[in-house]
Length: 130
Image (cartoon, rainbow, N blue to C red):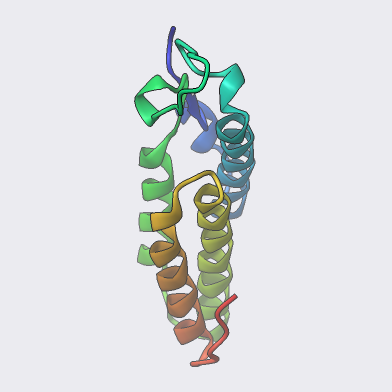
């Protein structure tokens, strides 16, 4: 059974950073839905056995989220508008990580919190952890 990646590389590289993050979010939500409904997507389902990642027919495309994160982090911080935009993008990326964390990837909580902290620092130190 072939492995399906969410998002597809061609789709994830279209549009502005905001649009790319939206594509990542939609893919994360689809991936989460499939992972949580794992019984329908396990390559060789066995009754009473928990699935492990190698048995899934889907995977999240980490390369694409890494590219977007790198672009956001490399974005300029010349003025308050730039900082606010960058903070907004980091917050949206944190939301993507939150969806992925809910897809049985609890270790992503640390990444999500780091992105929120970075966004808050750009906003001027407001300490909001959601």
